[in-house]
Length: 353
Image (cartoon, rainbow, N blue to C red):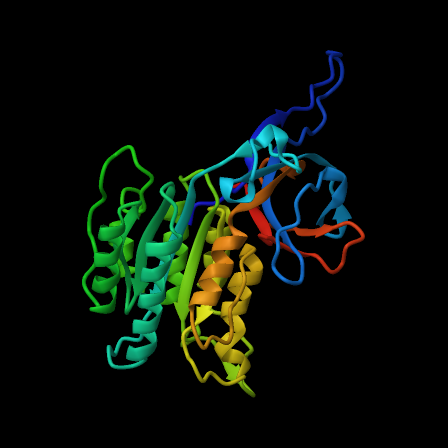
């Protein structure tokens, strides 16, 4: 997994002592990095909160508040009823493009959850027909024993409808990418790993995150799943009490690629056994998405995902790590003195490596 979700801004070097008679002291190199986090702020009803500035946000690393350099707001025109210079809230940039990946976590047996998968496909079809904007880019992916890509990013609705049908037929998926100038999953993905090293959903999401990383934009992964649990994860009293070795790399890969995961529970009559929901909720919380746990219909969930992603704040600040260090830095984001507001932001970033 490739690492580092931060943008190197400066390499600070400690200058050696000038006196010839003195021995140079040990000098540690430090990377000063600009961290970029996008955040969506909503009220209890899911309505976006607009007009916030850098003094309104609290970003912490290891419990220590980080001074923000800037907070910009990006939106498509659905949130504007006037030219941006006359809008009732500050608009730094109107960004029209949005990226969605519909991911179908399918059991190996095509007969299991057949009706639920068809309902999910039909909901995705209606999203594409009725809610997809001309500037949106959508891809179709799935997992049934390994990762498969049924359509690369495109705004071609007919292509996407064919890909949805192919996904539900448990087809083999695509093997090669399209044009060289368009954002692409297949052009950057490791095809050998897709066949041989994506046997678990965790591995598939890790690989997909790496492939999405070159696309410099927020990506939204809609994960239709009955629940994710690796055979190596131990369950006691209905709860997963151990972690797959593939879980944390997947979370870090998705965060490094700026992918927000929106899991939608496939099962209609799902019970409350924690292990069914545990990892889906973790993927949502760690990446700044949201888990839709109980669904009599999938349309309300997709509508909320669509509305949520009409705009977002981009927060920037500087942080320091040793030049030889590598790891994952956890981050918390909140709105100052507004505990009832919900902030969706990824849980951290990778550095070094």
